[in-house]
Amino acid sequence: PGEVLLLENLRFHKEETDGDEEFAKKLASLGTYYVFNAFGTAHRKHASTYTISKFFDKDHKDIGFLVQAELENANKLLNNPQRPFTSIIGGAKVSDKIKLLDKLIEISDNILIGGGMAYTFIKAMGGEIGLSLFEADYVQTAGDIIEKAKENGVNLLLPEDSVISDRFTETGNIEIVDSMKIPVEWMALDIGPKAIQKYSSVIHDSKSIMWNGPLGVFEMKKFSKGTFDIAEAIAQATEKGAFSLIGGGDSVSAINKSGLSDKVSFISTGGGAMLKYIESKSLPCIDAIMGK
Image (cartoon, rainbow, N blue to C red; front, side, top):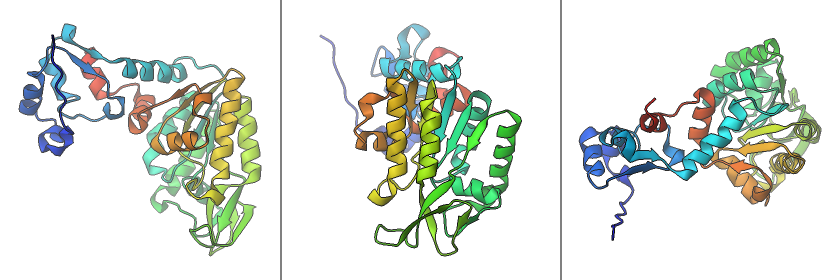
């Protein structure tokens, strides 16, 4: 009979994260075949995921079933997706998603923006955002993305209204206001009802949907409606025949928390890896195995 050897978390070793060749060679000596199935780490050039490939010939290494499923589902969006194709992008920072947004402008029909990053875009449009989260160094970039979307005929939407509070807590005062007119001492913590209605309408008319990043501070119940209502809209569109892909830790957490995880087409196990693949259709660990 064969043997199974389970190693502890290799990231405890500096050689692992350095992609050290000697360390990778030692790991390779432990097996006859190499199967890479850790999609969530496919964008990292570590010893056990990237460097190790060179110590197996092409007949003794391959990707696993999970990685295969991840690529097949991502490719449904990248290779002639059913249209309209809507991308929903949330989360805190524009800076993390510039390359992704550039790519999505090339392939999407609609881009719906929410979360903290929306207020960098609203600032770029001359809006008053109060104490809302925004990245001062990326206001110009956000403006450029808005212009690029217009030039490409992409319908890029920002939240028309926002749920705001005078404190980053559920015990503060709460109002719903025009997203361009947030009072000085207040901050936006979720998209408002008009934005939810508009975004949901676009989603319901879509045939392909990608969602990455929450629309508000969904961990606090009073600021979770935007995220959960959008999750519901995605589930309804999927039921009508749309293809939906959810990626990113917070989005996956939100879809699980909403109880709708079995109502979408595919939930990716890789946040950063999925985004990198959509950006460039390339991931170093997979390319190393496939000989690209």
